[in-house]
Length: 371
Image (cartoon, rainbow, N blue to C red; front, side, top):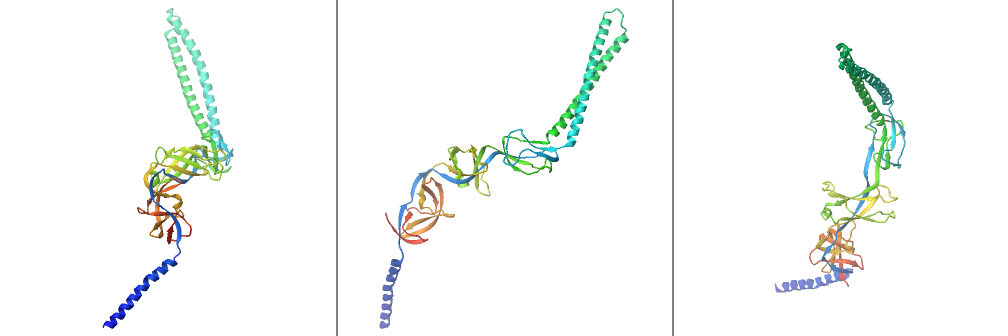
């Protein structure tokens, strides 16, 4: 049994002696990448977030006629400037125009009757006053019957005038109603602005259910963006919107936020924010705008240099150096001040992050730190 045990022991020793050599050869054959590493720090960081946005009109309205008829005239078209009160289009309403003409004639006739009965009342009152004066003298020149007849004639004249005035009032109201209906045939500008859409042509049958124009007020506009809910909690009274207009040549604008949505959109998990500005000259409404939104500062948080972050796709990634190996790890980021980026998760205390390299790193690469 001993010779056999000796042979087995010798074979095992030989295999053990060869194993480290194989491992060493494999390590020596792996390409080493020189990297510059830096310990993850804790620091204060002034939070900001970059967001795409859009300029929206302060007011936008679809204009419709308030009566039904054929579109007779269009006085403006797409892109035209408008002034509050301008007639933008008119609708043919011959029935309402006929009624207006008839009610106008009726009102004129009623006014003539009022004028005639007012004159008759004046004359009757003069005659009655004379009779009353003579009767009051006590000479018996006027009988009681004559006095009663004069008083009755005066009361009748007053009643006839009141009736005529009531009829005139009714006629004028009818005329005003028909005038209003005719005026409704004109589509007027509700504010100063611009025509952004025309939806009907001359000859189209239109009515209260038919939009003819969309107009917008653009002297002042809303710069609108949607902030992720995780960043929205950092919005306070110090928040500022730095607005830039890529490709326009227009200088950036810094302005306070005017509106912050009071609730998170449950579908997108975002909060709407607005900054109100005068529309820069030469820039169309609804243009693209880039938001850089400064938020409340974050204190004593883990940060890494912004250049260490791999931002292609989501989530973001970092290379972490541990025991001679560079590992590509996914991280969740927070505030970003342009130089430093807050790391919310994905790293451990004491980790070192790769900030630059002299070679190409893979998901796991053998690395050599250099100064």
